[in-house]
Length: 110
Image (cartoon, rainbow, N blue to C red; front, top):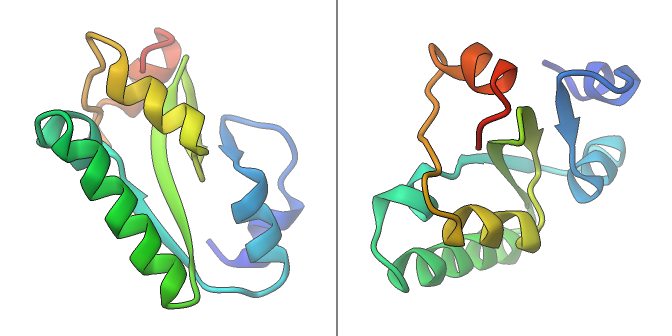
C-alpha cells in the first residue's frame, strides 16, 4: 500500500505507530519487520539484544523501523519499545502468520 493510502486511512483494524505515521507522511524510508524472531525465535536475553541491534542499524541507515504484530486483537505497524517488551516478556504469545491473522484479531490474541 502506498504511503498516501496509509496516511488517509482512519482508525481501523490496523494501527500505525506515531513514528511510522510521521515517517510515511514525510516520505521517509520505512522498513517493516516481523516480530517473531525478536519474540519467539531467540532465547532471552538474545531476543532483546538482537532487536536493539537491528533497530539501531536500520536507524543508522536513515530509515524508520516498523515492527509488526497483533496486540490485544489489533494489528500494529510500528510498535514502540514498550509494546515490543510486552510481547517479549508475556507468556503465551503466539506467532501469527497471514493465515492466522483474522483469528488472532477476532480472539484478541497477542
